[in-house]
Figure (cartoon, rainbow, N blue to C red):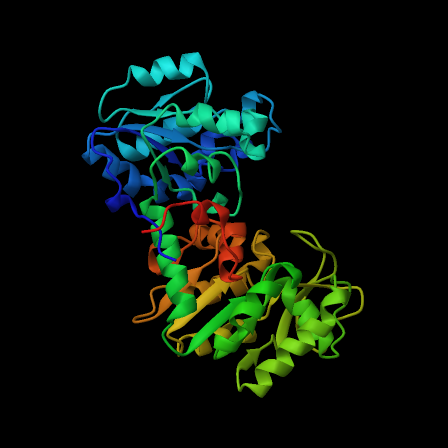
Amino acid sequence: MAKRTLSSLDVAGKRVLVRVDFNIPIEQGVEVIASYDQRLRATLPTIRYLLERDCRIILCSHLGRPGGQVVDSLRMAPVGDRLAELLGHPVQSLGDCVGPEVEAAINSIQPRQIVLLENLRFHAGEEKNEPGFVAALASLADCFVMDAFAVTHRAHASTAGITSLLPSAMGLLVQREVEQMGQALESPGSPLAALMGGAKVSDKILVLENILDKLDHLFIGGGMAVTFLNAQGYQTGASSIEADRLDFARDVIGRASARDIGVHLPTDLVVASSFEADPPETRTVPSDQVPEGWYIMDVGEATAARYALALKDCRTIIWNGPMGVFEMPRFSAGTRVVANAIAGLPDVTTVVGGGSTAEAVEELGLMDSMTHVSTGGGASLEFLEGRELPGIAALPDA
């Protein structure tokens, strides 16, 4: 069901509370925030929209997992500093997210001023969706904008509870996420391909259940390929097998075959003598010749080239999960080849899931070459599974 969008919400001159997702890996050090600021950049259109309408903008986000306690290393101020650089506009970071001092600070702000509240999860009431915490947040603003797609699968105070107390709408980021992924599921250009990788089959079961019958092609890589290959009778060395998912893998292949859906499994693999970034020995071997005790680390060069060629004939590509252990540079080639092949394909819609897939695309400098790169890992998976997301369901209908 369609939800209210930002253009339908009366925000001019008002105090607008915007739930953003600035949960970036700050543990790497504040000096490298600029290297992983996709989530900040993604919400700039909504912030600029509000600036143009003379709003008093109140941003709120969580950062890390402080467990309801104040953790100095997880304060929002460094993120606010980076946001100000990106916007070219001052951002005032506050020392808390609720309470008299916060209320006083917000009462003093003028149109086109921006404040960033302190980490929401310093208060246990955020994740518990406690009515008192919801009311305290709501008291700060005249209306609410949900622009944090990555947490729409959480029923927290700032994602779901708040909508019962303030006029609300989805922001431009969330609207784009819903429209792009919704179109890929509901009215995709054909042929439709799903490119599935990542560590586990179990993470993608519900996605495959939801989209398999709509597919023309299914490409398998990453750790998922280990279980799928093993299900076909291949020896997979020392790599972890999801034994309880072997029957599911066989069922997927059988159902796909019955529906004339092309299932593409690796024909060659990069293997290593140990599971580490710089193992003593690596080889590329046929998929049926993985040495005993070795680890599958990436799809091989021939497989990556074959996947890249076949994907170019598709009109819609849904990609979730790297083709190998991308975070280890020696085993990033498969992901790199496939990503470069599909980036910027003419007349092709490419929808990239969040999490590690989005991180890989960002690292490769291909963000602007994909039709849509989701900002949400878990949220994008649940959306592709066809599940209701609380942070979207709570918004009023259009």
